[in-house]
Length: 354
Image 1 (spheres, rainbow, N blue to C red):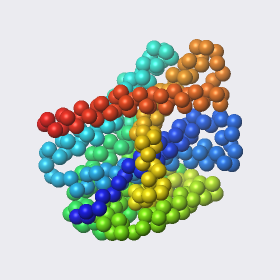
Image 2: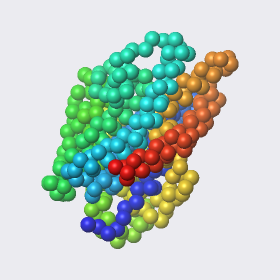
Image 3: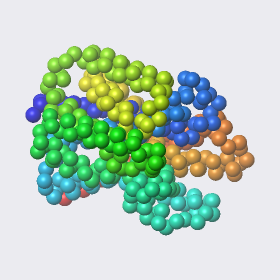
Image 4: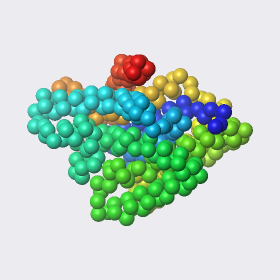
């Protein structure tokens, strides 16, 4: 067991960057400058933030849980309660807001089957239903699938050993990417299918184990090397999205995972430069509200559009986008302070009580 400790706090701020990029991708298409060459990659490839979420989810969960996973009812109970409590209550609240607006402001009929699919978080498994109601929720449907199999994945990694685990994870990633590329033209629903994203999560989980098991070795390497590697990998990512090769159109389901992995590992191991800056309280807070930004983006858009209609304002001007963004940041901040943090604390007390 490594005595050195791998810190993941500095990754937190990157979640905020990814979440904001996704918001611009979804709702910034009419901004005056969005077609400028400098911003065009956000319009085209901002959805890559979702596959980045899946990858770092695997990395962080392995860093936190890989040494704790065991075949016991207590572990499985605690693990699932903790993971669900982090995402499900806020997701349900955002879903309720969408249902409320649909029923009482738009006066539209609600499909009970769609509500049921959304409540059960299985919409991403049903072709044609992936983007129902609060459409960003499709990724939560995928994430819940990852939660379900994560403990079994780690137990499997423990059984076969770390080196074989890395190979297996890479093979699974290759297989899911190959399946997606081969079948995508025939079935666009694969964009949202949990199986098609599983390789991204699994390779993240495997390299989270890799980070944790090699912590002592990495601690002996000068931190500036990791800062340089982080800069080089980030520049490589920017070069890819600005050059926009044809194959990048198939990158939605984790094709850039190896590059994201290098960026993530480098950031985890950079303790003195960029990593240190990203651990400042302000950046940590922004990272902590990233889930609220992501899951409330559509409810916030609906709310601000409703206000515009009520007061006869021009809908989706540049001005509207930015006041929508401010409202979204306020909602996400309140969600974290008033709901997410208190729920997390109560669940921890419940786990300790049980």
